[in-house]
Image 1: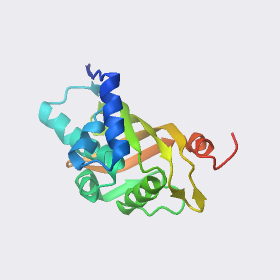
Image 2: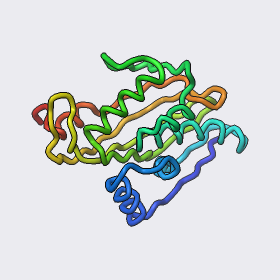
Image 3: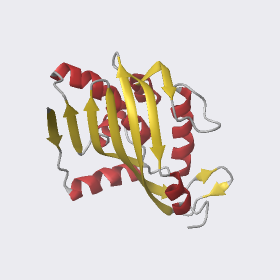
Image 4: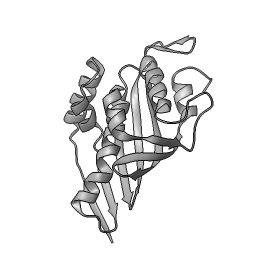
Length: 185
């Protein structure tokens, strides 16, 4: 049996949140609120306490991607966090997302991570996320020129003892690199 919660967010509210994010780095509470999924599907019978224990670190993790907060990252990830799709050059463990966020927020300072939908099953959460913003910073040796960025990613996250312990992820890196002008379309 699946329990389904749908959240409808008006376009004006989304525009307001995006405007806040674009204007300045958002505080942790706002970053977490921005990361609440538009649609949430719960597979199985989880008590409200179980749902909260699973979703709180997930919401903190996506909040972290909205503002790069070390406090949110610490609340989200286990010290034993393991990235099963680790890109070359990224450190394993919590240092990996910290480095990735720092680099990506330097390239796309107005980044907004929107969780489009999530499916929760036992200790796993599958999320479809959308990343938007403008490439106005630097990525490596390349200076952005304000190019609009809009791509998606899928995460499969494992939660144990109130922390994210594992991540399997796939991003539309080709789309991002084309939009940023890093490779030809």
